[in-house]
Amino acid sequence: MEKHAKFAVIGGSGLYRMPGLTDVVELNLETPFGQPSSPIIVGTLAGQRLAFLARHGIGHFISPSEVNYRANIFALKSIGVERVISISACGSLRDDYAPGDIVIPDQLFDLTRDRKRSFFGDGLVAHISVAEPFCAQLSEMLYDAAETTGARMHRGGTVITIEGPRFSTRAESNVYRTWGMSLIGMTTSPEAFLAREAEICYAVMAHVTDYDVWHISEQPVTVDIVVEILNRNTQIAFQCVENLAAAINRERTCECGIALANALITQPDAVPVETRRRLGPLVDRYLGIP
Image (cartoon, rainbow, N blue to C red; front, side, top):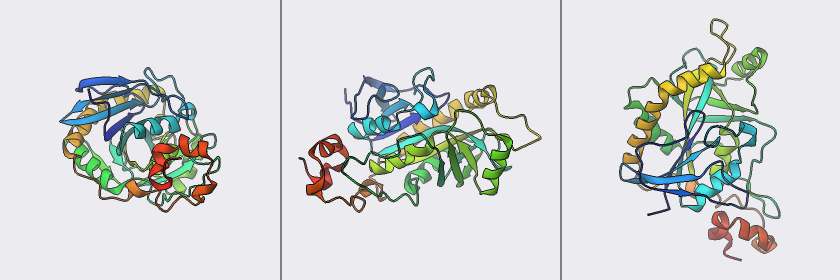
């Protein structure tokens, strides 16, 4: 069975499997950055080979700060993935983004502290452009696929990633609102940035589970509230992915696939051989095989 896929889904809280796959193969991969959060499941959906990875592990035992984001993205890159959909639970920082709604954000603010944010270093410097952190082309396709499910949809908005795993204080939540943030979550950073470094298109399907803690007329967010909304939205997520799989076959015309072309600043002959070998799937096309 084919072990490669160009399309992948990273499942967040509440999403640990992808039903409907046929011709399934389970891949237990090792990367230069360690093991991914879970085995990668590759199967066929709507005629498309699709890879699925559970961000928090099967059974949700990995905290947001403990997720090996580099291993996850590198592993997907190594099996040929070109497009990634992240399915994430988020809190809303706006009245009009209500619990149960789905948002396809277009901007990202990173407030994390304790995470590895780049594949690069150790003698190879890259300054990746992330002015537009999500692939606009893939985000548009994702919005169209989700809209056909009948869910209440929103296009655009900024998601702020906090370190977690605790939820925000009310003071913090209100500050984020004054900054113009729309959504709050714990996993989009550095995942989106690593996807760009790997030249993978990346878009987020954010499921609004709560109003964080700023909305004084609503109950403060708890795990039970998050799980309840996610369980209701799970079928919507599955249907959206199937819709997208049926429509995603066309070739990429965005610039995500050449993101490193103008990002590598180190002279090739100055890059340590071991670094070039470790990052081969990312840089061989630019630096050659050592």
